[in-house]
Every structure is written in C-alpha cells, then in structure tokens.
Length: 433
Image (cartoon, rainbow, N blue to C red; front, side):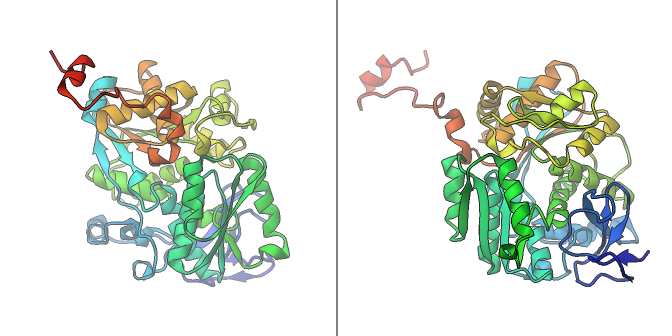
C-alpha cells in the first residue's frame, strides 16, 4: 500500500528513514497511512497516529531464540520496535528487562491463589517506566534530525528525557507543572538540561508544548509525547513482551495498569496482540484493568457510567504522575477494558497510601503513588469479586517511592527514639516477650 507524505499529496512505496520494521504511520480512526515522520495526528480525520509494521516472518521458535539471545534490556525486542537494527550499539540508557516479582506474601494478604506478580519498573535507569518510551523516542529524534529533546511531563518523563538526552548528546528542554514533588524536580534538573515550570496543571503544560511545536522557537525540537508520540508510545509494548517472556512465553490471565494518558495500557494490549499474531504466545483470553486515583478519574467515571466519551476533570490527587485530566487515549482504554472483560476503577488518596505501605511491608518494594493506585485498585477489585483471585494476575509498579516521599512521610517515621542503653530499649517495649 502506498503511503502519503507529510504534505499528503504525493505517495511513496518506502519510508524515508530507517526505523527497522516500522513501515508507516497509521490512523487509529480511519486507517489512512502516512510516511514515517514527526506526525501525531491524521491529516484527514485528526485521529491519533500509531506505528504500523512489517513484522518478522518465519518460525516462532526461531524468533523466541533470537529474542532470548539478545541483550538484557528492551533492545532484545528490536525486531518488533521502530528502531534501527544497530540500536544496541548506540549511546543510550538501555532500559528494560526489569524484575517480574512473584509476590507470594502479598498474594496471601489479598487472598490470591492463582499467582500474583509485580512488574517492578522502578529498576529502570531513572527509576520509572518512562525510560522505555523515551529510549524509542530518542531513536526517532535521531532519525528525523532533531537536536533538542523535549516533553510535557508530570515528573517522571522529565527526568527520563533529561537523562536520555544527556547520554545521546542531545540538548534537552522539558516542561512541568510548577507544583511537582521536589524529588522529581531535582531529578529532572540534575542532568543539566533546561527545566521550565509552567503555572498550571499538566493539561496546561501540554497545550503550551503543542503551541511551541508550531512556532519557529520550536524548530528542531522533538517532543517525545507530542510530535514523536507514535514512536514514544511503542516503548510501552516492551512491558507486554517482558511479562509474557518472564511468565514462560504465556499471557497473564489478568493485568492491572495505571492510567495517566492511557497510552501505556493501550500499548500493552497492542504488545499482547502482536505476540499472539507472531505465534510467540498462545491465543487465549486475558483481562485488562485500568487504575486511577479518585481525584483524577475521568476514564473510571466514563467506564462506570457506560460512556464512550471521557469527560475532562481538574486533577486533585497525591498521585501527580497520573494527574492528567484529559487523557488522550481515554476512549481506547474504555474499548480495551470492555473488549477484554476488564474494568476501570479508582481509589482515594488514603487508599493509595495504604497500598504503597502494603506493597513495601509484604514484598520489600517501595512504589511511588502510581504503584499505590494500581495496587489499591487491585485490592478493591479483588474484594468486589471483579478480579478473580484464582487466576494469574500481574500488577504494575511504574516508579520508585523515593520520588514521592511526601505521600507517606507523615505515617512512616521512627518507631521510637531512645537513649543508647538496653534499659531504654526494654522500656520502649520493643523486645518480644
């Protein structure tokens, strides 16, 4: 099939850049295809664009062996990603292949008997899953000749962009809401790029970045989650690939995923579908559940009301990394949750804190507020009988709790302060028996 150029008035049979198996950009609404480029919206219907592929052909067994022989990072899946074949040889942060923790202690606490796993993405280079998506966006930025890497961010993405740009030798300038957690501000600034606070919430920041793209000031800038968004989003597929490989090349029965823009959830589903198509996993049912904080739950509200359209909200939650009041992929999240027999649910800030502490207490994993949202929703849906405790369940922890210390600092203090003597220790009542 011929694909349109950026201008939309000529055709070509081959992409102009080398991004491996990526063949074109395809509109998720009308299906029109465009040449690979820094595009994010369809010229015909304004629908979102995503990467279309010429996926590998041949034996699933041989492809599995090729993947398993690859590096212990996302580049083991290079044949399924919009990156050049030599990507592993380039300077980058090599994220991915993080631990899939068999959470038996947590399973006992929640009454799960079918196997409970935590995909712990706090082990990435900047301690969040955002390193995955940025790594793919960097390759697109290189291919299109951008010299500055940028983004609108709720915190984790800013740090990931700053670090990846530094490693790749690119300039960075990232934009954040002015009231982010201080830990995320410091982590984004330390890499030496420009960090700009915008007065307003994330949606205000994102609108500003969209305006900057169309201004001469933004010439030569690759915004990873705007004009590079189709490529950026593909990084989330690697979570699906890793989970299935780490489960012995099988799909989980149930998976719970936090929702900010919704892109992570939609791309994990895309990753599952690609593995099925390639014969790398058995085609069988799986359920996808989305998790939001009550103070920013537009997708959950739409799901519960039976709506197909997501009504924007003004965020007010401690889970700032998920505080996107107008999520771009919200309608697609609704489609996936309903198609797979899943659901979208929300929890209060108090439940978020309780879940953070539960995960830390049972499995020694200190998750950030997004992880608290996901586990809190998991617990809520198990208690409501929506998640089946007899099935294999995977829960995502997408970031490190050291980034959101304020959420738990008030209730996580020293048990006691005593004088340096055994008598004082005994008097404090800390000795068993």
